[in-house]
Amino acid sequence: MSAPETAAPLTLLAMLVIASQSDLRQHRIPNVVSLAGLIAGLALHALADGLHGMLSGLAGAAVGLLCFAPFYLLRGMGGGDVKLLAAAGGFLGPQGALLAALFSLLAGGFTAIAYVMWQALRASADALMRNDAAAMCASAWAASHIARRDRLAFALPITLGSIAACWQQNGFAAVASWSLGWLS
Image (cartoon, rainbow, N blue to C red):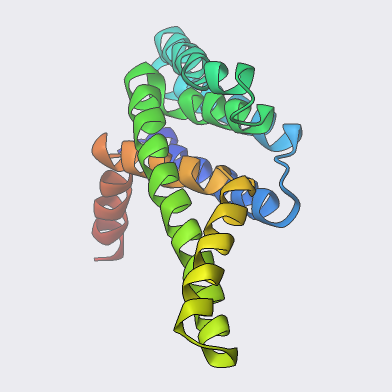
């Protein structure tokens, strides 16, 4: 396995972790993170496969951008999320970007459901401790409606979806086997 092929999944992971941390803390993904990630992805593709690799990275970035652009235009997602998936697509190529988008949407759906359930359970447990079962149900219902209005930091589902796409393309599996071979 060549150095660019080893570095690509690790660099992608670093970019995604930085973006997720920023999104969870500030509900914002800095443009510099996505831009640096895109440049790194294209450079690693070019090192691995020359012009063909760079074109594959550009196609992946375009697919990532186009997959989430409708959500941005409908105000269902922020621009940083769209740019982050485009940067991930620069690492993954067009097929990987499409897989990352699909896996990200699945992860986002599960995350949203889990968040609403967590808020409802937390409110109902608090109400049960203070009052009775009737208050518990009313609190859970109210908390679930309030939680639906909260913004989801979507960089985390994009991270999970991109990691799943990279794993499906044998990116992380190849790095793991290379690392284990290097250690022996």
